[in-house]
Length: 124
Image 1 (cartoon, rainbow, N blue to C red):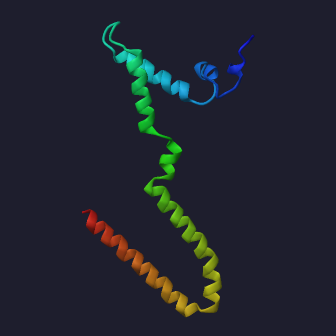
Image 2: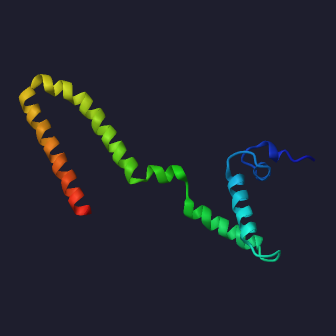
Image 3: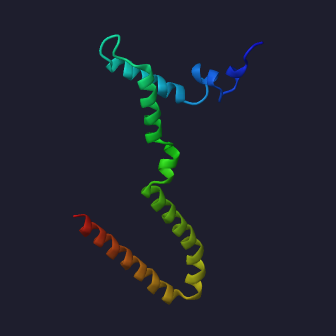
């Protein structure tokens, strides 16, 4: 009976042949770096290297999750939501109550400048 597991991109056989995602290439780089840094022929321990690779993968985590969890991404999403909401709200309210809306816009702008200046002075 022939093993067809290598045909599937998520199988271990396909992973060992370097097919599918980039996990094999990442492991190969880690393995070769460990071999190169080992002193002598008996200096490299494959079992210890595999354990170090597992802990390395746990520490690094998923890059997409790290990006989505970053403070910059949250700030960007908040900015885009406020920009979108403002683009919908601005023409409607600006036509019905232009003077009041102008005062509110000026107050928001001044508040943003004060907050930015306080943030800069705290970081110094």
